[in-house]
Image (cartoon, rainbow, N blue to C red):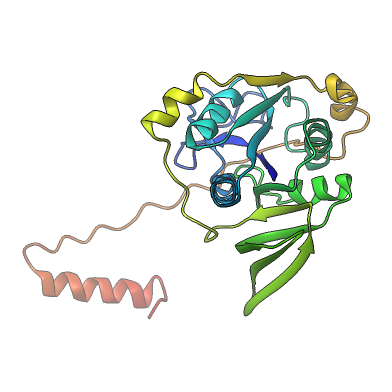
Length: 264
């Protein structure tokens, strides 16, 4: 069996985000980039299946040059091959355009028995790419899985919903979106890091896939980010010194919680 993992390379969730000069992008200076956390679950599940059943794991990403660092990390964790579709600046945030590129790349690199990705890419958080890739490839799709059982030509996926869970059966090939709880992603080993340096990353252009990136970002665009705003600054907190008189500090805290915060 062969598996494809769709990977997004995103700002570290611990990064301090500043707005760029255009107002509709972040200032990337000093930002640390990481494999999207939900995509880590997808990668780990693909590697676990490969270790149990054999096959090969290919990691696919669409984006600027820095994406290759994320692909190298995925190779160090246990993926067998990686492919990078260069570009993405003009299609930023447009889930349909991104999915069209990824679906065309999956079709070119495949066939695959499973296509896995995170339930959403941290950053845009629209949770649309996995489902849209599945629709474009005319494959079944199960979103937000937290448990997976593979059979002969079929799979059983478990997903959490409000107030309970769902168990869904689907034929292979299939597209799956991984959620937190599916597994515990591994760290790259030193051996894996050294081995990953010897694996070539296949370079593709959007044109290689029969698509026109200028059109995807222009006349065919379905989503454009016009403006970003930082959340309002939080009001300064109140510090209650309590070293000398803890009882008085506790009484003041209770008063503030009751009269000001209306919490008690």
